[in-house]
Structures are given as C-alpha cells and as structure tokens.
Length: 497
Image (cartoon, rainbow, N blue to C red; front, side, top):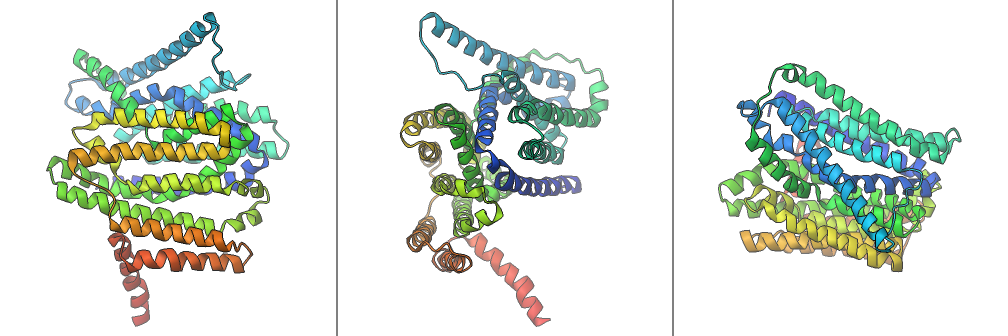
C-alpha cells in the first residue's frame, strides 16, 4: 500500500468518525425538537434514493471499465460520457415507467397509492438527480484513489448542512417548509464540490482528444448496468424501503422516532467497514486459488469477531440509555420506543454474524446470484412492511426490517453452503448469542435505570455475563489477541519501566 493510499484511508476514517459525531449531535440534540419534520426528511431522502437506484447502478461502470482507458481500448471521455448517458437513460426509463403505470391505473379506474410529497416534488427531483450525480463522481474519484473527498462531501458537508438548516428552524429563523426547501441547495453544493474536485484532478486527461469509439464497450456497459443495479441492493436498501413505507402508511412522527432509534442501533455497524476492508483482498485471493480451507477460516473468524463486537456495542448502549434524557430532554419521547431500537439492533447483529456473505458471492464466479438475493430482500422488505406496519405501527416497521435482513442473509448463506461448503457460524457464535441474550434479559429483569447506581449495575452485568464469557471461552481469537497485545504493550511495559 502506497503512502498516498494510507493517507487517503486515514483521512477517510477520520472524516467518518467526525461525521459520526455530527450525526450524534443532530440526532440527540437537534432532530428531536420536531420528530415529524425529521420523519418527513427521512421519508423524502430514502424515497428519492429508491427511485434513483437504476441510475446509481450505472455509476459502477467507471470502476468496472476504467482499465480499458489505460490500455487505449476506449477513451477516458467516452467512459465518463457513457456513464452519465446510461445513468440519465435509466432515470428517464424509471420515470416513464412510473408515469405509464399511474396513467394506466387512472384509465382503468384504479386508485394507486401516491407519495406524500404534495408541494415538494421539485425538492424530491433535485435530491434524486443529486444522489445519482454524487454516486457517479464518487466512483470516478475512487479511480484516482481520492476517497477522502467523498467522505468529506457525503458525510461531513451533508450532515453539517442539514443539521444547520434544522437548527435555524429550531431557533425560529427558518420555517419547516424552509428546511425542506434547502435540500436542493445542499445537493447542488455536494455535487458542485465533487464535480470541481473531479475536474481539477482529471483536467489534463479530459482535455486530451480521446474520441476512441468502441461499440463493444457500449454494448458491454449497457449489459453491466443491470448487474450494477443489483450491486446497489444491499441491506441498507431495506432501511430505505422501511422509511418510505412507514412514512406512507404511518405518520411522519413515527418515521422520525424510527430514524433516531435506527441511528442508535446502527452504531453497532462501526467495526464492519474496517473488518471488511481487511478481509476483502484475502477473500478474493482465496477464491482465485480455490483455497476453501482458508476461506472457511476467514468466514467463521470474521463472523465471530463481528458478532461479538456488535453485540458488545449494543449492550453497552442499552446499559446506558438512561443517560440520554440528561443529554437531551427531547430524547425521552424517543426512548419510549426503545424496543424499536432493540429490534433493529437484533437485525444488524444477525447481519454481522453472516459477516462476508456479500464478498464471497460478489468476488466469485457466481456473482450473478446477487440478483436472487436482492429480489428476496426487496420482496421481504415490502411484504413484511405492508403487513406489519398497519398492525403494529413503528414496531412493525422494525420487525419487517429485521426479518428482511434475516431472509436476505439466510438465502445467501444457503447458497454459499451449497456451492462452496462454507458456513459462517460455529459453537463460538452460539456462545456469543447466548451470552448477549442473557445479559440483555438480566438488565430488563432487574430494570435498574437510576443514576449512578443503576448504570453501574447494568455495566457490571454486561461485563460479567457477556464480556467475561466471550473472552474466557476465546470466542474470537482476533479480539483476544488484540487485548493481549495491548496489555503486554502498554500495561506490562509501563509497569516494568
């Protein structure tokens, strides 16, 4: 790894941590002042993303075909232009399909459900187009290894601007409508920053006369778009479907409560990206070398490590939930629905326990199976939300999201087991699950939320019932080795000196 790549990776990590801090301020202090407004924003943005998915699928073209520009088979200009053309074509196709569907339904006298976007269709369209453009520039900058700027734009600037607009509303300097109307400006700014940075880094390349026309590339890129589409359909899409359907079937206030609980639950995913970035090259090498023994080792070890880390983060958050109203009194309304967060967290922990499912399938010759697993995710997410939200409300949305994630992972795990004879879970995974359930159950049985006594009891329970067994039985070799190295490096070394 070159110094520049290490620098970019470090900057990306630091900006992600900063973005997480900004997200905490937004969710704990600002958004709680108007849960209905937060809910509407969390309805509009995911709905725009879902409609934009075909265009986002085309954004993977640069990463797939950029080596052809290095060999001179296609021009760089052709690659960039083709990406934008296919993205625009896919968006236009979806828009036409939706218009045709509603037109035919109107002629036949069928009343189809309409999105709750009255008066905000312009903002919706801007967010949708902006989302696609951001994804395209992100992939183009990845080619130049400029990943830090994408984290700066997508995470820091985005969260700062939305939080700032919401703050102006909280202080009475902006109306509710004004907050929503700032969304196009925010996305124009995000796209502008990425576009300028992309142009500055590729000015010389773009200025060259690279008008090479390659009909084969045009055909292959058009075919690849449909596979790029299914690469977009990951577990995160389940959240967006839930937001869109809860906002449509339920209320925007419920959507706001769901969003903040989902933010707290999603904190357990913090270790995921680091672990995946560590194991992805090894998975690819093992598949190319048909080293299924090594692949099984990666699969099970990453599963145990991620399950233990995710469960531990969730239990520590749950043990200290009573602190949140001290941070922000508005959090009391959110914590009335704390089991929504628990249900969502259960789904995320299940997803972590299946660890590198996506990578094993995507890097193998069986990558087309992603179509089946993605369809499973969408069908389950839509069906369970449609059934459960009218009956259980916000709890139904959380259940639907977790069931969809479980179904999605079970389908992929079954495929991996049948094709590669690999399985993620071991006896250690069972120990981790049982320890986590025991710690969670005891905290709920005792229910000591007083400060500081109750918090002390809760944290001691997590330590004694979860952390101690996980370490004692060495359920994750990586975690035990890491702690051993830290103890020997810092504690023992310092005591000797």
